[in-house]
Length: 100
Image (cartoon, rainbow, N blue to C red; front, side, top):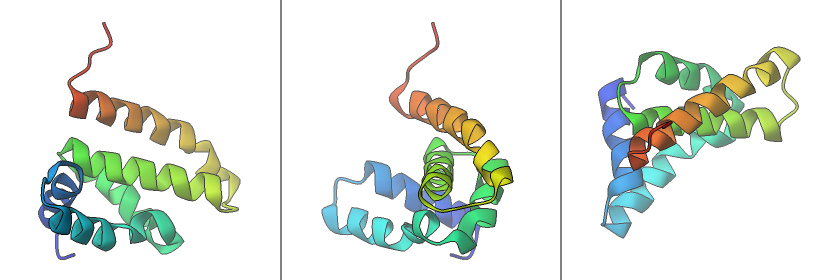
């Protein structure tokens, strides 16, 4: 992936595309974020810089999966609540929900 805007577009296709081939391609391309611990810093970058709820949802859910499935340092585990909160916020944005 060359830049954040390409990643954001791919995330939107992952969550919104009606074309199963396009969606499968997006899923295949993005699965590395939730499977490979080398992508943790990129997930953090996405959380800090992305502007779309789909990219934020990908990064936060990937980090949450990484933290819960791997034996990661306590510092990363303590960040999981923050990721969970961001994931909840992203889901609310995607589905148009409010806190009220």
